[in-house]
Image (cartoon, rainbow, N blue to C red; front, side, top):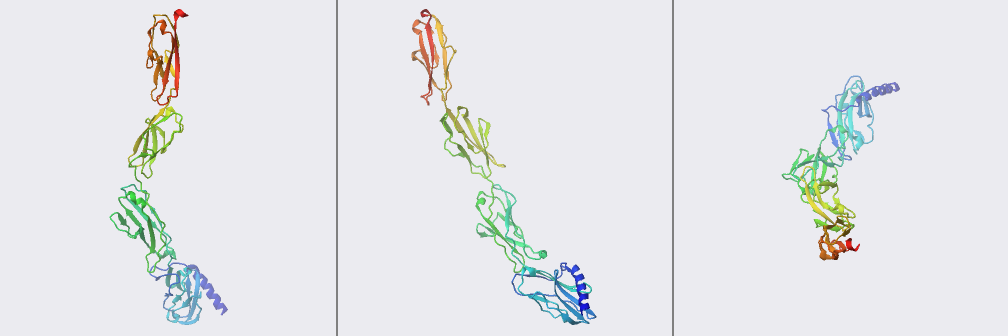
Length: 410
């Protein structure tokens, strides 16, 4: 008996090496849920009735039981292992079927009936244990602009084992609380794996999309719902504004400039500021900090987005400054002339904004910034003062004095 057992163990080992293969396509395929009803795996063949023949029931790489025949009669039959496996057929009539109770994920696999001596597979069936599809994810093929189309995809993976089950997944969409909504803008693929939304609208950026996946098989599981997904709809610019109602800012030099922000209703817009037609900054905010007179000018903010027309809006910045100095032309401030000579006009000027008012004192001798005394007389001798005054900064006035002497008095 020991020699008998040794010989068959050696033969079984040879069989095991070649038996780990999938069943033929025509073999039975069973799909079962975990902990579902008992499942019977049919393994039926015609028993060889001559000599000693041994049959082996094997799951993947694991031996479940063996049955030995002599001239068609059972001479030894082992119990089926593990404990939840029972023989439900009658081997004497070629029915080697087994029944599994308390199906587990580990129960999944390929079950074969093999003739030990010839290694021939006489019957084969595959038990697939169903599982929940992986939680799906949603993605889109692009970030659509208003008026374009977008295809949104729900993706999941089966967890049914073994993985060669070939089952497909079907998908269910929930859009803003509606399950698989219909409409002229919605087009679904056959499995609802994809949904195409045409004529995308700005409001589509506020809808929330979910999806779930189910395995297409009797008693197939449905996945949990995906996390919410929203479209990134590109739109604008339709208009442009500032964070102030002013389009002209008039402010004294040296004061702190309050930043002006360029605003628009737009997704993925970029902003640029130009000053007097030349690039100034590439941000939405114009910040001049402590205002200098050189920063006066016309600023234009442009909002732009790829594939859309740009919008712009102008802001005029006026800087109140001066007078910083006063000057005269000719630059001479001392004239010594003879009585009866004619004195050329002396022009007084100053750098200001807004334009400074200019006055020579005594005022009777001046015409705004021009000092013109004409033919000199001794009464013309004296000091003349040019006063430059900024009407919006009157506390800053500068004086220039010109002295005309009577030559005869020298």
